[in-house]
Image (cartoon, rainbow, N blue to C red; front, side):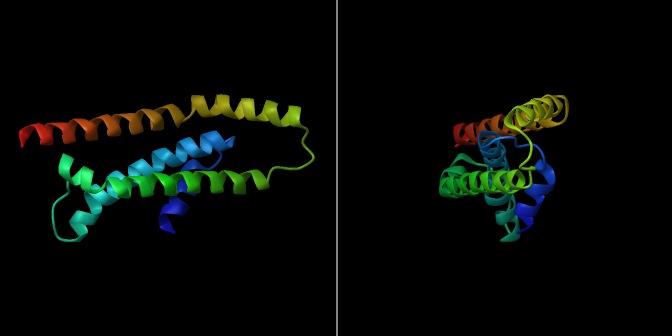
Length: 135
């Protein structure tokens, strides 16, 4: 429940269609796979974070689950947000509003968040690759 609420707090008013909800959900699922399966779970079980290719391969089913959860979360949250749009707004007004909001999103934090997700993904791949090469 806490993960879903933090998604709602972080990505409120960032999804303007189902595709963007899916995109934010995939990014959020990937983030929680890295934080959860590879970092927090091993630490909570009394070990060290598992940043190796073998650990990532063992946690791959968890990645699929986290990404699927993120997609479901992103779509569900978008649908809940879209439900509260006023029904009396015409489609042209709604499109104008969505275009204005997308522009605001580009000028806000969205590019930084996507850059962060890409950086973390590349960083994890480098760590896992270097761990596999060392063994």
